[in-house]
Image 1: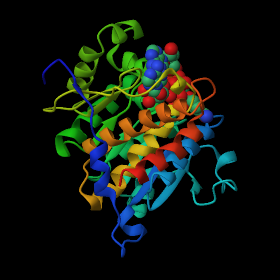
Image 2 (image 1 turned 90 degrees about the vertical axis):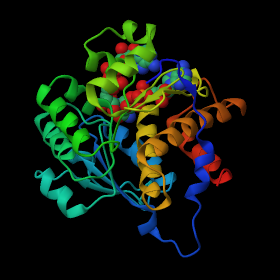
Image 3 (image 1 turned 45 degrees about the vertical axis):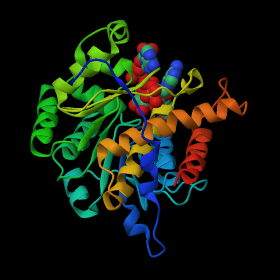
Image 4 (image 1 turned 90 degrees about the horizontal axis):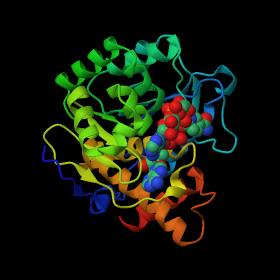
Length: 294
Ligand SMILES: NC(=O)C1=CN([C@@H]2O[C@H](COP(=O)(O)OP(=O)(O)OC[C@H]3O[C@@H](n4cnc5c(N)ncnc54)[C@H](O)[C@@H]3O)[C@@H](O)[C@H]2O)[C@@H](O)CC1
Ligand SMILES: Nc1ncnc2c1ncn2[C@@H]1O[C@H](COP(=O)(O)OP(=O)(O)O)[C@@H](O)[C@H]1O
């Protein structure tokens, strides 16, 4: 991997998502998103809303918090269910095209069981975010499972740490990560053998045997809780459509990162932000940009 990042330029790939007249939801793919423990159901709902609005055929939320595991009347398209106590069996029965775990997941034993099941799942794209990354940072067993998964299925797992999560994974300080972000993302790839998206200003995307890419879009209006959850849902939706539209997880991740940051810039230009720019508004702007780029 060379050290100097290239500029991310992925929006041209979006035309591959154009839909032929006969296509149906089966072509757009089924996504399962796992998270939403007590007090953080909103994180999973944001990821689910992003997934829905970015075009997944089915968006299913495995909600860990029983109090929040019910239909969302604001967004009835989302299939929200209480996370099964037997995650392995549940995943076997559901047959998703893409799995994502982390938004609002928490670090309970139940959360760990779900993460293990996801890491041991068959060869499907897996997005790992937020507390799922924190759990891996704290467990050599989970890290081994992640490394093993990447040995068996290279290129099928993406991690989306912000600098705080990256610091935990590498056992470093956030300031160390930010001082040399290129070196940090290289270390994360080497540790996990995954595709890694190191978020923050000038998000970096890296993977084994690939050039490092840097996103030149985005602005500090994106510093609002839930903005990363939107990215997770977006990567999942684009990857799910990519299964039948010839976009792999790396390409879908690149598209999602640039679309996410470009949507925030577009909203800022219209005066919606930087102050008070919300993740929910960003989802809707991403949908508009995506459709304009088909
Ligand atoms: N609506 C909700 O329910 C929300 C729930 N959330 C969940 O809350 C849990 C905790 O996540 P948090 O990320 O808030 O807390 P963390 O403790 O994981 O991370 C916060 C730390 O990371 C640092 N950091 C983050 N981005 C940075 C950047 N760009 N540059 C430098 N430092 C940076 C911060 O300064 C802080 O020290 C997760 O499970 C997450 O999914 C959040 O996603 C926010 C929204
Ligand atoms: N100053 C900034 N410039 C560009 N992008 C930013 C900036 N601050 C935050 N972001 C982006 O906003 C998102 C924040 O994600 P994250 O910290 O995981 O949020 P949360 O955990 O609250 O959902 C990331 O995509 C990150 O790259």
